[in-house]
Length: 187
Image (cartoon, rainbow, N blue to C red; front, side, top):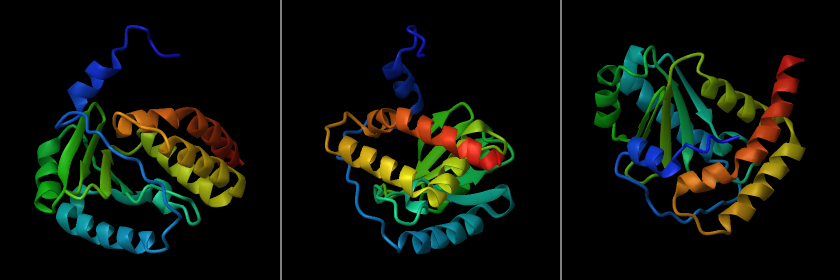
């Protein structure tokens, strides 16, 4: 349950660098080139971050073969201390990624074309587990891949103030899928 004192708009104003952006959500069929795009990004990020990157993972829908997705490659990078931006942010910016999100425990950078999102966390963050569990389960479960694709296509047909509203609208189905993913992971 959401705390009634929580002001979502104020929160977004405080964490989004550049403010909210109107967007048209496009969900397309799986593109078999997405893994190759990630592979090139992994090399680019590894070269830029050197030892600062503890791990670099392909996450999100483009990391799941057969899953319809927005054509945005999501990357998870873990660093020793996400709050220590001087240790990694200049290298990401020099490699062509602009910072978009600064919130406690999470940073997000993206390309100027907005076709790559690089999420930065510390190892062990709950979001890291969520991203990996969701990705790995969706690779296993055709049923939940279909459920997620259907949900995304239905939501993409609606107008959204920005990407955050679209992402929030997927929360219930993601929670449902993550519950099954955690049961699967524990067996």
